[in-house]
Image (tube, rainbow, N blue to C red; front, side, top):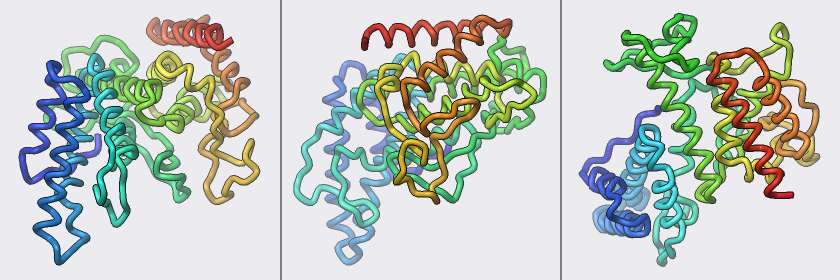
Length: 337
């Protein structure tokens, strides 16, 4: 994961304690976070009146550090995902005060969760190694991303980049790790990546943050290539197919209703006014030939891919993930009929 900015005080550490303290409601935690931000903003204004650009520093550093810390909590413990989402929702519901905050010269409201989108994007980038294209889309939708593969870091901070190593590949694919540092690191990376996607999907499902772009990107990169024959398949990740399918399954199981009802488009197919210089991040990753975004027929396309995988002879965890995805999709269709 991308390194978090390091605050020069203990405010982030104190805030993290409140986030983890389940005796405090998400609303109480949010109030404390907002109070700390306002206090730090006052300090900044008082201490740097001669340089207005620097009055942002204290509260920005605090929030940036806190966002990354909350994401790290989500990566470690999926049981806290709903609590974290509740805290974000409570912060978004905070009523802005006059001249509340500015960031990079722009006025921000609490409804925008200042800095959260950047932290989320960088953390999604950290689960995989990404290249960022020259074509960008609005900040709330992140950048156009092309995945390379899951980052595997050892206990001492060393990187294991050879996914063809049998031990690393097997652990990423879902086999129990062996008693070796690379295998343990790969198993940990796998768990964190699944948790990251579960968390983002859950934020979308609960209305805490719009993650539609990440959902469509995941299906395009991790599922749609499997609609093609193996010999013509051009995959965008170096991860084992088992992990790809499990990540795609996470999105439809956690945020299936959002995905089924979403109609957002990221490309010229379906949006004649699309900027031709912005690429087509919602385009097909396989045999899909419809709109560059969400559509009921694309949903059915995904369901067909999952169904085919569920009836195949892959690793048990991949087959079960595909079967669970089909069940979840059918449940969504029944509930929204």
